[in-house]
Image 1 (tube, rainbow, N blue to C red):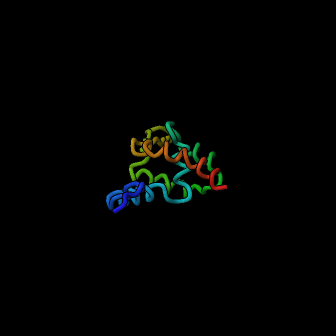
Image 2 (tube, one colour; image 1 turned 90 degrees about the horizontal axis):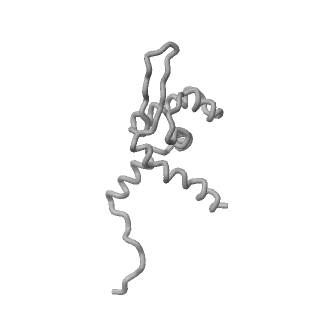
Length: 110
């Protein structure tokens, strides 16, 4: 039987993990939110200003989902007025290099 130069196909476990990763970043706004937070700590209002096309309700829902998925951490400070800050968790930081490659892929698609 002749050998081919094809790389080893992903295992079933790889497919499961890819599916989980896609579930984390799926949605219209999650990629942008993860990229905007990056290595910084940001507040809700800052994200709202940087994403003017998203509604407050949608942004709040996406932030809540990303926190539940373990991508973002949410820190609430007992101040008046209240202050809530979001940062990437190690899981979220792991996605950054991959997500930062998307603009290059988009350029190649032209």
